[in-house]
Length: 339
Image 1 (cartoon, helix red, strand yellow):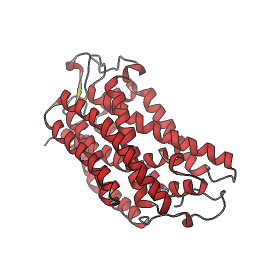
Image 2 (spheres, rainbow, N blue to C red):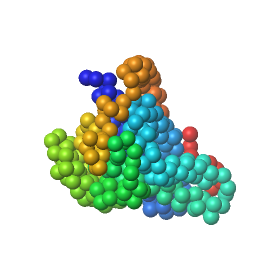
Image 3 (cartoon, rainbow, N blue to C red):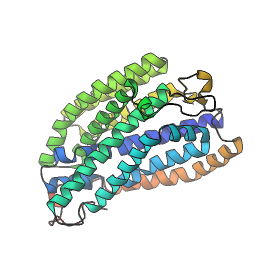
Image 4 (spheres, rainbow, N blue to C red):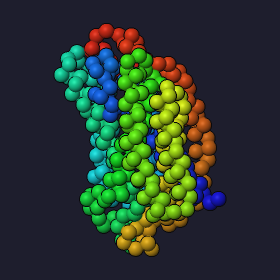
């Protein structure tokens, strides 16, 4: 296997890890005002992801850095063409992080409510926009002979990409609701389980249509991975309804993995297809760095990836216990995020 193929695979793995891990904390953020009946409930919800949300974003940073280093032409065409969309994602992620840290700094209901709504919208925005972005990456965008994006922001808002956005939005919300059944107790856990059934149904509908569209357009193995994703979504709903939280979470995580595999499998060997002329498409070959650069990157990845994985696994193990309302100290002005 060529180093270009290895790095395409590694970037796919990084995005898969990001969507599985950041997916559930996007879901928790989106559901903050839906499941949280009062400030204590909302503090419980935030504390379920408090120790891990920023670590989950490391996967995004590494995926972006790996793309820049391994496929610089892909990075430049992608970030110039998707500039406004990615800027909106960046702003949302910044506001979300600020909201987690600031909501408990002042003991004021109005102050906390404002930051809570920012968490909701700053979680839903990226969940939607990542689906739109990857829908466009797989479907293709207008590129000229120099691999310059020739469309506009509204070019990205095509039916297939918007459907991809709705698929990731509902899938992450479902994933987050199932995660909360693992991390909360009593009435809050019951509400999360009840809501997960409805969200699972929405994820099956939007995700199923999106995957069917992808499989019809690209064929081959996309059909198999799409069917696996759909089956895992159905299993997630059934496990959630049957009070089998761990199996439900494993199913939603597996569904996200299958969806991401479907997208990258449908994309390969392209990294950014051109709808103007297939000859203008960026591929793993014409968009890659030099062989020497990829060799150095491979040795760095071999050395440091196990360390990062071990640390993140340890973090999840340490903070594995459920959180209840009694875990939250009295006083609304106390920090909302437990570390």
